[in-house]
Amino acid sequence: MLKPLHVLLLVSLVADGGSTPMRSDAGLTDAGIQWPTDLHPLATLEGPAVLAAHAVLQRVLANFPKQDAGACESSARSLDVVVGQEGGVYFVRVDRRIDRCGWPVGSSLEFDWFELYAVSPEGKILARRAFMP
Image 1 (cartoon, one colour):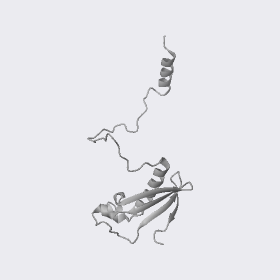
Image 2: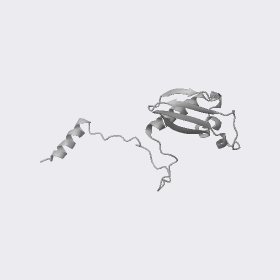
Image 3: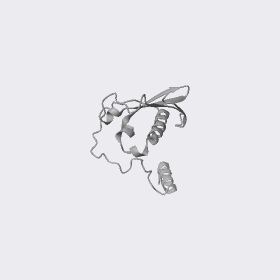
Image 4: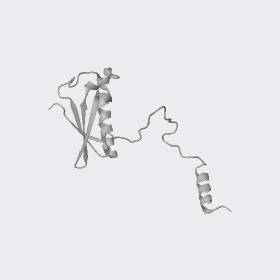
């Protein structure tokens, strides 16, 4: 005689065709990664702050000249992202750091370059503030 839990399991397996759920990391291996025993985060952000930062970073990267695609100075590697929140709106500032691309510290390709955006918690860019007042 089957126990009630076994019957429920059998019914649920039959209902979904007997498949097991696919994990989002299926097929990924360690690939020689040295996993930390104690993770030291750069920052801890809530999900909506990450969405806001991602939306802005994608916008900024898309606005770089196409002929510079692939250059370090026009990549995420050369950018810092600062996220703040005020009144339910996220404010995301992107600063350019070309010293990460081999330039001397303090170098700039433009005068006072930065981007500032207001972003909803859902990741929708609401407005952009001019970076050259």
